[in-house]
Image (tube, rainbow, N blue to C red; front, side):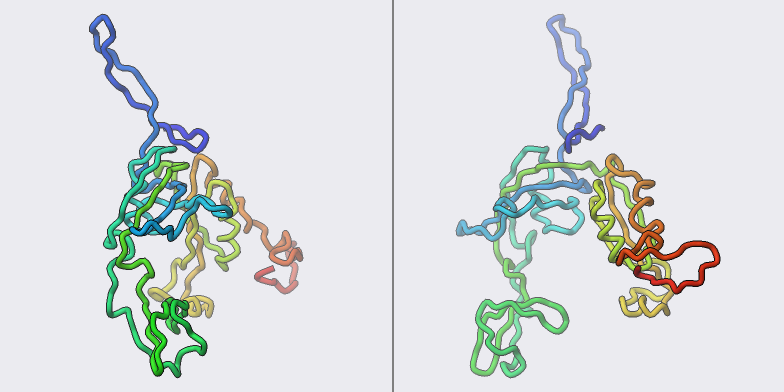
Length: 274
């Protein structure tokens, strides 16, 4: 396979019968169809059964959606709509709730005393619960407020009109994990590198299962903060990633552009974040 101008070209052999009647093999080029694990960018428009548009990447100011098929960043039905397309092809698929945002779950509709709700709430307002879950106000009564924790598109059939713009085959994608002291800065730096597909932050090593951020920051769990990078090895190499951002980070100025002395025997206090 070879990557050219954002398109992955696969070569295959086909048998043809020329005028002399003999079968010969001829090598031809065909665009590779998108499959699970490939990284793609698409334009899309999502509509409801009444024809109203609930989301689109095609309006001014929006950029194409980028994701890895099967990576869990989009709903299952959207993965299905893109799978099998070649670059430049379009597809229109109606997705059932089971492959979108699920059916409406009555247990996710709750009532809370109005006295405990923020003042001035109106129907269709969005609120954030104390546990971090988003909710939509559906009823504001005299003594109670009804909140719906279901996704606003739950229970609905969704139609997606998608166009595949670019495709990077899974074969050329690699992963690397970097210990980073604090992962926020390095993650942003890696995101800026051409060829980096996606980043995830987390913790490595350590003696506590599933630690909280606060536990790790306390230094008591033995974990290191890390950034896992998925990258296209045809655009950027592992060695080039090692040359990011964090090599000689503090001596080059760090976050506040204040270089720190790296000479042997220096006893100056070290400012960890620059």
